[in-house]
Length: 520
Image (tube, rainbow, N blue to C red):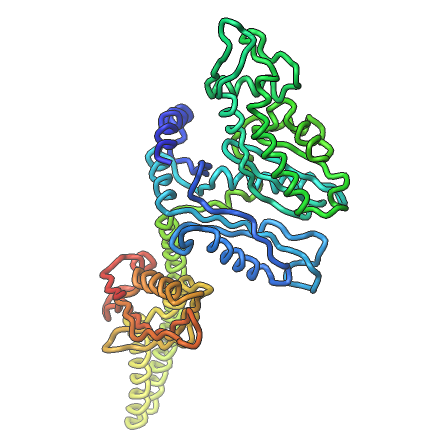
């Protein structure tokens, strides 16, 4: 990957400078040998969330690294059209989920490279994964009701084969044949008709130009008269790669489609292979499929990944970038919650002030009546009652302004921090030695104790980093021996106190970092 990034640095720098694109948000498509991706199918009756969870388990098995510690994404891309909406009914049908995982070290390297170019990373996606999504889109979008469309999309080092009956995805898989294999085959020694030069070796660029110009020749043809290259000299070099591609395609169609679905099935060749004359016709002839109009295949001109709607949403970013984005969203939510809390306090203080003025007016009226009645004892009692009401009003205002605990901000923090794996069973909010504290009981549910511990530590770090939290400590952690992957815990959050004589807090005051006393 480092070599590819070094090779692309100068052209990208020139392009960014030429078009003044500094600061632009970009999606990066890159060649990857470490990423794990695929489409995983699950019965529709499992529900949307059930299908996604099943895909995560399958992706975990397919990857050679733990996906929980590395960037990964899953997304529902297709539901068999012939069946009821997902989660309803009992018909047999599949929901198809795309999943991808990449090593965090590779993602960080690409992110650093993007930042060095003066750009901002939106997401990244391997070229092979993007080509797979493009093949699925072509197969399902081009199919007519009751007809089958098979899409063969070849790019640099491998290819993708996808088939759909109507708009129902039947299968998708990668194949080992790429156009580079054909270029490299033509780079071997070629016999010529030139007596002065009986053999010739082509460079990779010369082989690419020759293949895109003459394609798959017919036996007996003169391919390049100037260099004395004939079809009979090229076909033995190309035949093993073409045969492997044909066999993989035929086997996939045989086992992936029923006999009725294979009848009238049409072949669509896209990607770089569509630029090779005669390749699509050869594949259709050898697989027994009818070939779509050449005009459809001529729309593909290079190896760049075709961008389909929603493809960027299935991209990913490094873990540190993902956490930074989550922190920004959390701070925004906290600022909104605290602002709402202060608005409530302000309204309450205004109402109290109005009530105090009403009491004061009542007291003045009573004083006037007492003076008129000249009843000293009665006047003294009424004045004492009025003064007590005023003192209570003053005390209520002082309590609201000086020491009001920000429980709504705590609830906002907890709602933004919790995930599907974390359950809160009890929240107790009180004061301890003048400090507002929140005692939290809950449990973490995961596939294993290790995964539960990782989720629990992520929760501790998120709560401890909150600006309103003075200290986050672990009271107890207990593993449930009866249920694997379940941990019960008790946490104590101590909030920053509000000074008794401080001015009314604003939303900007809450986001000050302060002293974080988090205890992992």
